[in-house]
Length: 323
Image (cartoon, rainbow, N blue to C red; front, side, top):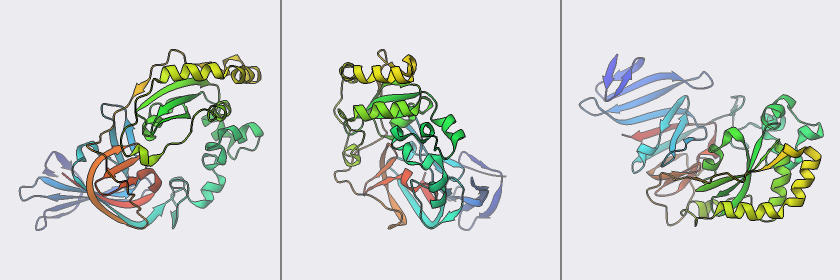
């Protein structure tokens, strides 16, 4: 065993005292070996940590501010403590499908290979347009998946991201869904019996509100605060006829107005927002080395640009963190 800093290394594959580095072999989610490398100072304390593996969307927990961890292979790398420090992300050209693990040259829909996009229910059009539910039409690609994910209670909600928007999500995804979208406020509007009903309600609400976020405005700063309960009450009054129709068709309990819901306020770990919004693209610029200013939604905000982590699911990278 070799001790350094506050970390204990029990499986050292390579220890080079002349270069003050430790390299540890581990396994990624696909069973392939990868290496976690530590750069030590002359006294043996860790000054740089290097992780390598496949990226996945950041894991976020509601706190003040939100706590973020970045999956790199099997490691969840804490990021809040790295704000103000330099991170280096180096893409080595390999991409693995986030569903089946196959090596691919190009990913689709945030990390899938083309065959998975064609066959998985999670990649079907009704995921982004739930009013077109294929389970209800009898054409679901994976009926068992639909029963597990779509025939469950959902929330129709209001979220203040770059302005107020309407959205839908399964109950267990609250507040994760709101954090992933970069909302600073969120409020459940309706609890509904299944995804199809949430989609039909959302279609009607989109006549009053957008269902999209302006990502550039999102990353310029927080939007003005909104009285979401007041807005919810006003919207509910205007939906009486549509709700009555849905209750008649799907049952009285299929749509429940969340009149006593309490808004959730969300604070993100951002030291400052950039004056100009530029994007980093790992396909065009495979190595990024920049100072991390903050994190919001699924974006890493650097001094020189922003990176949408979710876009690069399955990309095999080397992440260097200055301690």
